[in-house]
Length: 149
Image (cartoon, rainbow, N blue to C red; front, side):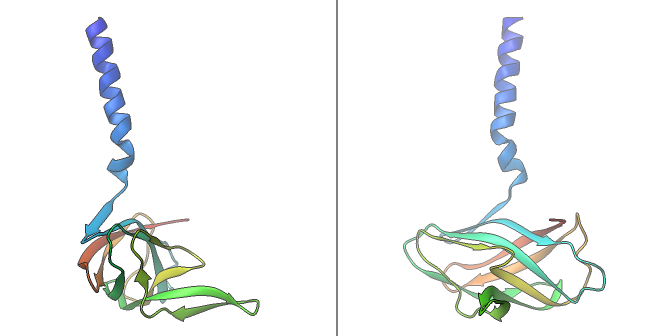
């Protein structure tokens, strides 16, 4: 009985210790780690959408996003939302750098991947591929999970 109890405790501990990593997907390319990749669900009539994520530079060299492509949109690029003279504006962000030892968090109200000319609906519970190219690290294909937030 003691062996069964100990085996159960050890098994449960292992399951709980790995539960967070089972559901969280991280991508690695070069010295970069990309995590928390998602897009907000949108109505079927939407012509645009956005993708959010965190890109962490674990290396000693600065890197830069040099391209983004996806079959979900006719065009994809990094935009930044910012407050200018009391008005929220969104601009194309060219030369987005990720400094060594730092993270770029793409989130609502800040940097994000803008999807223009959507080719499909961003429906809760679905996913789609998105490829990001970096100047130094190379390219990586991500799976973007669509969810209500």
